[in-house]
Structure formats: structure tokens, C-alpha cells
Length: 547
Picture 1 (spheres, one colour):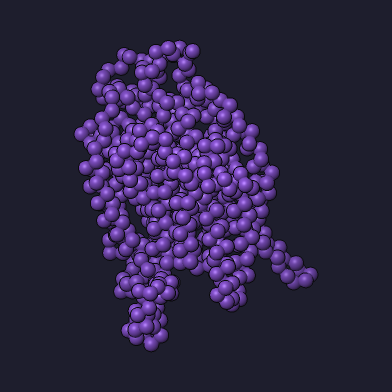
Picture 2: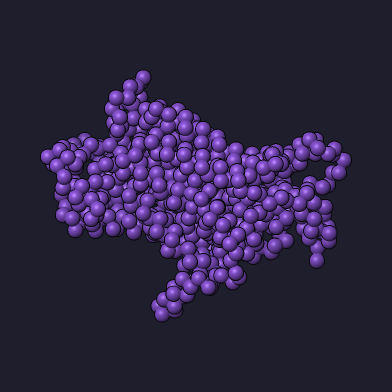
């Protein structure tokens, strides 16, 4: 125990990780990347509020189909070669696509926010709308329009993500790239939390929360205050509507696009790209992949040839034995945590309010401020794979705690409780969300470091993008399957003799299956992680080097 606390204090010593001087250019680049990653996380957080807003008015199956809008993040490598070979030389290879995706995202968000269009799609029955004068053409939720809107938005954000990750590697010095993982996680988390806090929180909750601050005491005692009993009741509308938030985000996106436009991208050496090996293979037994055929004409024909050949390189990387082992881990490890999203949605059906959930979820961001140093300490001591492996057990504990808390929630809101019991309930829920957030941060940091460590350094950008796409796919499809199949796991049986019916919700059945399978199979991942460590650098290469 003493060694643990010594290691814990050691983890928060900044000089442990700063082995060289930071220049102002390094600080500026990291700050610039953080801003862009925040803007990248906001659309994801905006999308994540949609299933919660539709929870009481749409089935789990329809919400599951709506999650297909995030599929571009898992398939973004399919159009990455196009981004690599087609760009404006005056702007730069990565800057072209960052600016292009941000401008189109800005226009799309402006279209969705114009005259409350997204609010009309989400709330055609006038519920939760601040402006009740709005007229509607139909009384049904426009699910397909919402899906198409966010599918295009996620496609643009995924394009920006690919270009920005590549730009970050080119922008930062080699020893500073280790900080890119935490910058990525922190920026995405901050951006992800903003829509939760602003959209899900209602005016009643906001006034109830802010009345305890000294600044608002005078305001709440005035007779003309909306929250004063003499004036009237506070309406149950959202503090910020979805369209209003999108309009505000449009302005931020426009300013950020101007900043990106001014930022200069370092010119790269000729004949180098994310799919072409560098010229460091003089002692190699094979020639670089894209230089095997030199009879291709220069210009457009050569670019077209390299574009199609890059897809062949993708298949060659996927056929490598180490990549197969790592891909199995990336595509299966989240199957045991698939019920997390349906547990959260079920809690809100049992009585947990949207605004309280959004408030606690948004403030779980403290994990991104406190725990990076601790995670970095364990990575430096135990390595990437061991830290990630033990992080799976921490997430498993959070899943078990979430299921227990779901049962508590079912009976908690059926009775009246005093403020102390409510506070205990909220603190327990907050700790569960923080543990889950910590495991997500641990996964991002360890994966980013592991991908950069094992990747073929001659095509490191492409390699990391490929492994990250596999990781995104492994995160996406378990949640999708859980929402689609949860109703099929519901068990209903009626007893005619005693005139009673027994019904077990599919959430409990699916969670029990995930917990039992996790208890049995999570320990079997240790030799698989160990196997990933045993492969030498040459086995990860598509072009083998001789000594």
C-alpha cells in the first residue's frame, strides 16, 4: 500500500515526464490542436444527446438504427487515400481537408439551425420548445431527416479527424507526439460535454442550481423573477434548444476556420505521403511497395495509380500476423460493455431526469484533468498493453456497478426521499460515470501510444489511421447491437393457474450475459496482449528489412 501511494505522488510530478525544454512553438501547436479537437468533439456530443431526447418517444430499435449515423468514423479509411492525393497545394495536404470539412460542417449546421429546423424535426408536438408560435407541417418525428443530417455531419467530422491526426503527427516534434493522445482525449471530452450541459439541462434545474450562488440571491428574491412563486412556475423547456446550440456552434466553427486558414502547414519533402514508404530501405530485400512499377506516367496517371495501389497496401497490412492479433482485440474487447448505453437510457425511463444526467455526465470531465498523469505513470511502468488490459477490469467493475445502480434507480424514484438520500444517490452515480470516463481515457491514451509504437514508421500515418478505424468499429457495433437486440432479450411468461405474469426486461438479461461472459473471457485476453508485445518491429512491417 505504501508503494502504491509513493507511485501515486510520483505520477503527479510534472518533471517526471518533461525530459526536455518545451518551446513556445510546442505550446502553441498543442493549444491549436486542443481547440480543433474541442470543435471535433462538439458534433459528437450533439449527436449523443439525440438518443436521450428521443428515449421516451422512440423504440430502442429505432434509436439503434439512428446510431448508424456514426458509422463514418469506422469507415473513414476508405476515403483517406483520396484525401492524401487530392488537395490544394497552396493550402497544404492536411490543411486543405481540415478547412474543407469545417466549412461544409458550418454550412450544414447553419441549415439545421435556420428557423429552428432541427427543433421542428425533433419536437413536432410542441414539447420542450421555447418558441410555441412555431408551426409544423406534420406531427411525427422526422427520424430519417435527423439521421441523414447527422450522417453527413459525422462524415465531415471523420474527414476532419483523419486530416487532423495526420497534421498533428507532422506538426509536433517526435518527443512531443506522446502528448497528442491526451490533447485528443481532453479536447474531445470538453467538446463532447458542452452539448450535454447546455441542451439536456432544463430552465427549472438551472434556476434551482444557481439560486444557491451569492450573485443570484437578490435575483431570486425579486417578485418579478420567473422562478418566484408570486410570478409563476418555471417552464419545463431546455435551457438551450438544439437549434440554438447549433447556431452558436456555427459562429465558433466559422472563427476556428479562419484561424486554421491563417495557420501555416509545414511543407513536406517530395514523393512522401501517408501511403508511401520513405527512402530508408537501402538495405531492404524488397523495394518499397509503391515503387515496384516505375513505368507509370507522371502526373494524373501516377496519382491515380498510387491511389488504387494504396488500397492494396491496406490489404497487405491487414494480412500481417501481428495486425490480425491486435485487430481481434480491438474488435472484441468492447462486446462485454455493450449494455452501458441501454442501462443509461433505462435509468432515465425509471425516473432519472435528463438534466441531472447531463449535468453529471458533463462534469465527469474532471477525469481528463486529474487522471492523465496517473495513467502516464502506469504506462511508463507497466507498458501500453498491460495498462490497457487492467483498464478493462476497471470498466468491468463499472458495468457491474451500473447494473446494480439500475436496480436501485428502479425503486428509488418510486418513493419520496430527503435531500441527504438524494445527495448520496447522485454522488454514487457520479462516481460510476467518472470511473467509466477514466477507463475511456485510459483506452485512448494506451491505444494511441501502442499504435505509434508498433506501426511501420515508413507509413506511420496510414498505419495509425487503419488501427484507429478498427478501434472505432469495435466501439460502434457493440452499442448498435445492444440497442437493436435488447427487446428480443425481454422474457415474458404468464402463469394461468395463479393468474400472474412474469416479465424480465431485456436490459437485465443482456447485462447478465455480458457480465458472465466478461467474467469468463476477460482473463483470456492477457496472453493475447502478451502476444502483441512479443512481435518484433520487423514483423509489423510490410517491407521486411535485413540486418
